[in-house]
Image (cartoon, protein in one colour):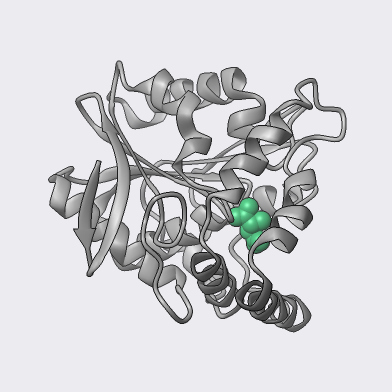
Length: 264
Ligand code: MLT
């Protein structure tokens, strides 16, 4: 499906009925990474998965795409779709966006699921590297980013090495403008660690035990910082845990929805 949000065409999946779960992808991916979750939860919930601006089939914008801007796009999409408060599942960069959403729109949140992500800002050298990478993408296209990221998405012991080809295809559909804008937005993102204690909704923090992109220690710190948060570390999984271990991921998410959110 497709609609105009803040002046740009936004593509999204919207299936099922009931309490809405909003799945937000990481960088430089798109909603295709949630296909196992859409299939796994649409029978019990309304599942919405957008392509963030500049990714997948959603139009890009020029300049930094801040995490706050992505969050306000999501809020506008939820209003357009009349979802009511959502359970927000954010992976990696999608987790940065989820934390921005939790800060800006706390009353529009029924639950929070943070996957392979962190609350801190970029150290200066990482931010500088992203700005340099954004310039390279603007000049040469996204190949260097795909080459750097795709091999790091799965566990080194993965039982599904063929998945890397699918991941490369998903990454390859991102626009250069979108990738550059998100790199600049991540480089300037806020440190949300002090906000974690204010999160008042049931929260699940989930990570792959072999995540080499965002180490599981970041998830432990998130879970320690958010009141009442549950932590699940899944074995034999890397950064893209929802794709790599989709059955275990869906089981963990489903159990948490039943136990902590008390509704389907
Ligand atoms: C992601 O998977 O979204 C990225 O690895 C996040 C990041 O680069 O910080």
